[in-house]
Image (cartoon, rainbow, N blue to C red; front, side, top):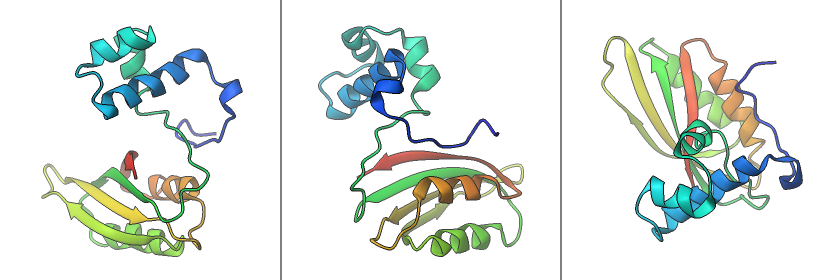
Length: 146
């Protein structure tokens, strides 16, 4: 089992620290607090716990159809790799809204994709995992859900 697999876990099964990280992220997103220190103080966790888990937990919205997901991935500058990533998104029946790829530096590029979740879109977590498992992909991270 790889470390980067995705799971759906009921809230009651999560350690309290992970739930507090989600609360701190919501505070920061809502702009009720301005700094990570203020957010972590408000939910009573350390900044190091926040930074350790912030990219690894986010709420799952059951009714995410019609929503937009933006994710970033780091990839090798290999001919055809971008096409394979886009084909994978199409295979899962998601609609690509925006594509932005940086100019490769040291043969590594960053790709930001925004996709729309349609009624026929298959599992987003499976799609992201399949992209991350492609040769030449270093990592995939979800940046936002709207």
